[in-house]
Image (cartoon, rainbow, N blue to C red; front, side, top):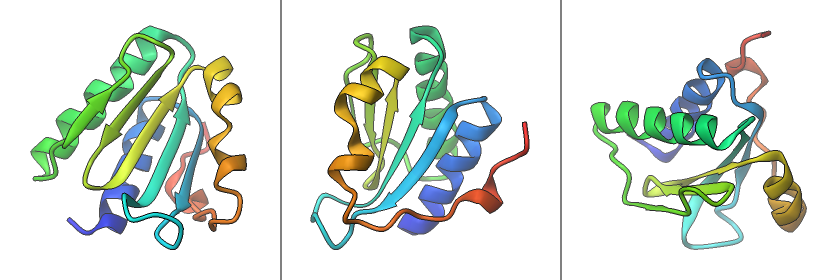
Amino acid sequence: MTDKEKMTELVRILDAKKARDIAAIDVESGTIIATYFVIATGGSLTQLNALSDEAQDVMAQKGSPAVKVEGRGGGWILIDFGGVILHLFTSQTREFYDLERLWSESPAVDISGLLTEN
C-alpha cells in the first residue's frame, strides 16, 4: 500500500469504529519519519484500545502491519505503520499534546469525503 492508501484506510477504520475528531496531516515536508499523521479521539481507554486493535488487525490483513506500537494504557497510543503514524488520544490527552497546533504549518488533508455522517 502507498502511504496515501494507508492514511485513507486508517481514516475509514477509525470512522467505522466511531472515533471522534479524525484528522490527517501531511507532514512529509516537515519530517523524515512519516508522510502522514492520522489523529483521532476515543471516548475512553477501552475505546482507544478497540481502535488500536482494529487498526492493527485490518492493516495487517491488507499487508501493512504495524512497525511499532507505544503508549497503550496512558491516554494515548501511537502506532507506526511505516510512512503513516496513527495517534489515538483521549480528549484530555489530545488537548494536552495538541499535535494539530504543533504541526500547523503542515497542510491538513481533506478527509471529509471519507467520513460518514454519523
